Image (cartoon, rainbow, N blue to C red; front, side, top):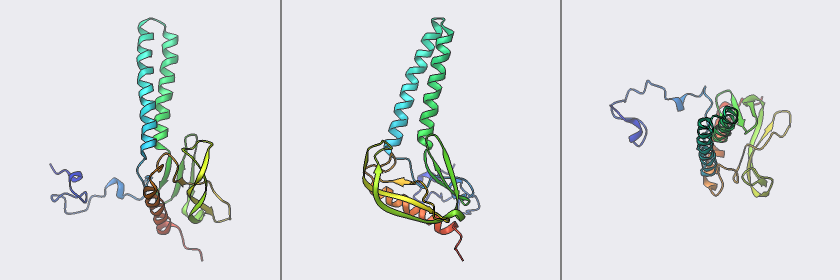
Length: 186
């Protein structure tokens, strides 16, 4: 059985025909052009650890016979699990149709035709999404009608804190997607 993930380029010697399109090669699907950062993964792991303790408490409460308390604890634990999944899902996603910024509470999709320009700027940015701001880089997008849309990525968010080269690669990748699929103005 060929194991393509063991080779350097992801293609094994037994699969040289190249007819099969991999999921990451499908430009119709939404995908994140960068990996989640260690801070985002650590926050999600801590939330999942908390939910494990909450589920254990749910079991103990249920064995004690207090079904109302067990159901409340179960709902709270499932809410924490959902929060952990949403933390992992947050970020910028791209596809052939456009750009999607997934936040913790909402998602906004922008078609490539609505984007006038993507640029990296020096400006005050939020540190790990908290109210504290520090000087840093941000990937911003400007709409065709001149509207300034929300900041897409910063070098101080949960994906890129202390990883400036990863921020540069992610900004370049999003820019490459924009260059490939954004229509040229006439």
